[in-house]
Amino acid sequence: MYGTLADPYLPLYGNKCIGLRESTLDMHGVKRLRTWTVMKETALSGSDKIILNEPVDWVAGEQIAIATTSFDNTESE
Image 1 (cartoon, rainbow, N blue to C red):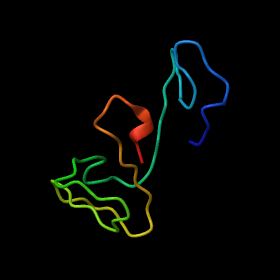
Image 2: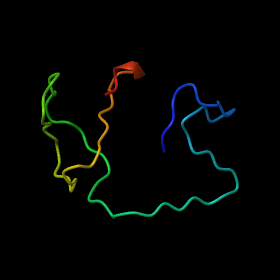
Image 3: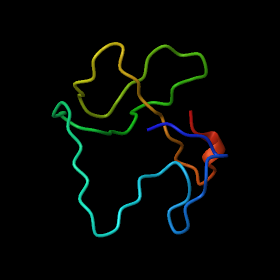
């Protein structure tokens, strides 16, 4: 599930998406304790750790995305 902002744009869906109509999408993988949580503290630029509100079962080497709380999507990491 990779893409760029320059990828083809699908009407009603946009780009970088999975769009279904009258279909079923099955995704399989490891059952997780939680798939998202909130940071308890702000992580400063260059920090190598984050403090979360809740425990997670993430494993070293997995990738995470830290999204902005702003409406400006250029602020996401």
